[in-house]
Length: 78
Image 1 (cartoon, rainbow, N blue to C red):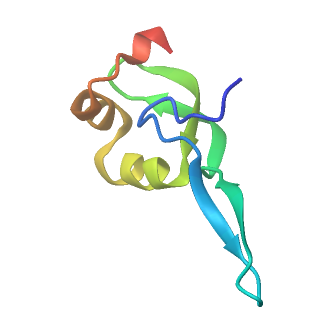
Image 2 (cartoon, rainbow, N blue to C red; image 1 turned 120 degrees about the horizontal axis):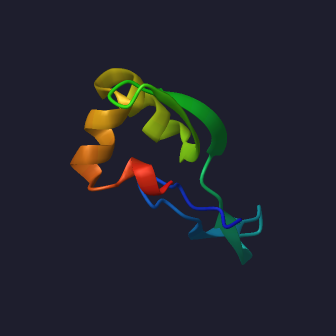
């Protein structure tokens, strides 16, 4: 399974590690993904989904159905 948020599509970011002597090496900054079982109110069922913690905060605020609709994601296909 790839490390991609199933709602937002967030994936790893390229960055640099900078040492004390300012030697720079490449590194990957992975998204903070969590496997969650979320309740989908409109369909009255549970959905297992891999989402970022940022998306979880937005889901708590807006609700799963509204947030997925605003992103154009079909939850039935997940």
